[in-house]
Image 1 (cartoon, rainbow, N blue to C red):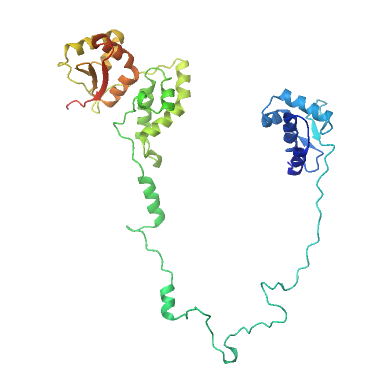
Image 2: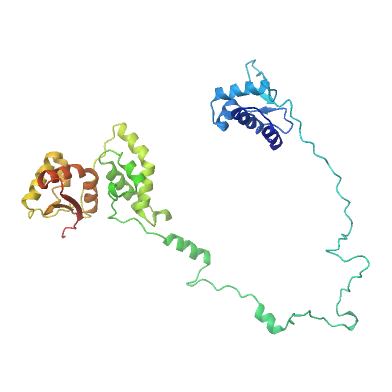
Length: 355
């Protein structure tokens, strides 16, 4: 590569900006003499951001105006090899060489040494009975001042041990491990860019991936198992896993929703015996729109509270409430409108059942 050839190419007039760009692109790979350049048309096309056919057309134009010459080359087997390029009108920059100055045995510049007619002071300032003197504003050095000016060594870190170990320990203590009860936020509560990706996932994939995410980090023992914000780590997991999830779904992989259970293996359930008539009517409408197996898993443990024209879907866990909002928002709203009217309000709530 030669900056001289590239500078020369930028000074030429071709009458077309693309032709000029192709010339500069070739010059970028030219040797300093301007007589040999091996570069493919595809590479020039990538650099100029045009098609290879366009590059070939402008190479012909450069040959016509005399700024470029193409040299055909043959391979050893007789086939057509890569073409080389040269600039027939380019003249390499001449660099003049000047003999280095004679280095004297002793520099004689007046900034470092005094002129010849000035004698050097004796090395021993006390020679001839003279005592060392201090300039104006100088302070004599005494044993007491030397003691005060000594640099004190830094104190060892508190708690013993070296500073590096303390620093590494502090780095490990940043953040916290994922909780056994961590649940992913509802898809509707995700940041816009992440939410758009999560909504492309098939049914069940969101919570299946979240369960795998939680189980992986619960079993991880390295320093990276501590995070400042586990929800943000989950956002990154969504960005990384979207292509794989969609590819698996296309291949026929089915994502089953995770089992809803507490830590002791018993599914948390709320008491629904006190629901009012409107709540029971909404429950019946939802049962018609949702498959029987899914209704049993996600709505039998859930209580529906109606207050005027407001329906509150009360779930026994964060994960179940998140799953309601992500997967059953439409059937719930349709059932709500059918019973309480289109102006009714829908709210979500989590209530831990008594153990």
